[in-house]
Image 1 (tube, helix red, strand yellow):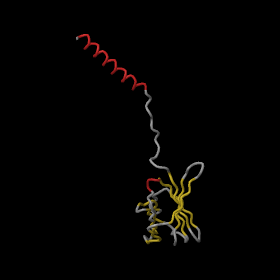
Image 2 (cartoon, one colour):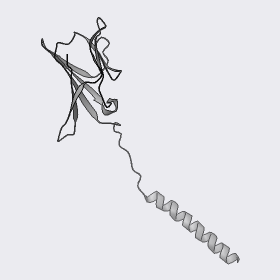
Image 3 (cartoon, rainbow, N blue to C red):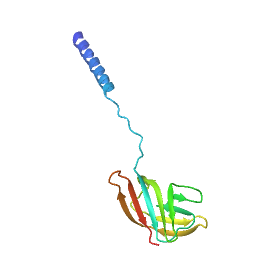
Length: 137
C-alpha cells in the first residue's frame, strides 16, 4: 500500500512539474500600444463665412475653442465659405452628429443643428477615415 501511495505521489509531482514547465515554454503575447479606436478626420463644410474665432461642440463635447486654443484642427476661411478639419478618434463619434458652432469672441450662436448630413470616406490603401459634415446654413 505504501508503494502505491508513494508511486501516486511521485506521479502527481511529475504531473505538476510538467504543467509548470509547459507554461513557461509558451511565449507570452505582447500587446502593442495602440489607440482604442482609429483616428479620423471630421470636415465641417459651411456654406457661409465662418466667424473670426469659433468654438465647436459636436454631440455636446467641445472639440475646438480658438479663443483658448483647445483642439487639434485646421480651419480654412474664404470670403464665401469655410471648412473646419478636426482630428479625432472614432470613440467620440456617435450614430449622429449634433453640431453647435459659436463665435467665441461674442459668444453668439453661429450654427446649431441636431442631425447633420454626413458622408463617410475610407481611403482604400491606408484605411484612413474621413467624415464630411455639410452644414445647411
